[in-house]
Image (tube, rainbow, N blue to C red; front, side, top):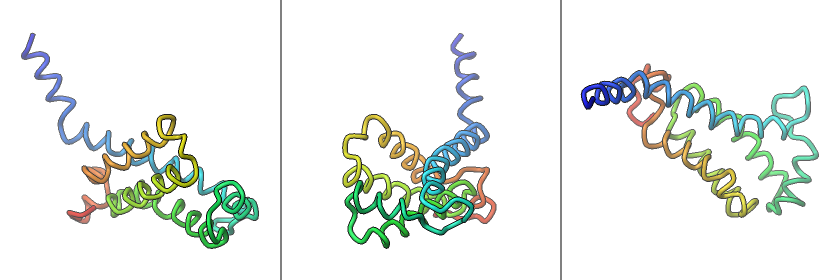
Length: 146
């Protein structure tokens, strides 16, 4: 029985299952931020920030300089998920999304830790620690820091 259990463990703990798990982790984390990014721009445009975004950053989020912080968040929420999904500079992209998550947690929605943000932190942390895995551009290019 122990041989069967050990064989099952070996099957799911290899480099291919890890690569698939890291790919899903990358897509899951990137998808959260990408969908948020798309709500910040005018419909039919790629990066033209909407007036609603400026209003939210000023009134609901209480961020200073809402035109600037809104633009930075909009660009980061578009650019970093692309890096993460591709597995290009995965650790850098995931670290950026982690910082964004912590800003949202501490300054925007402090009550959302157990509901949402703990999962985002976990996903980003996995990618920072493990990198993009076998199925990433980082691996193809041989990046050690990716």
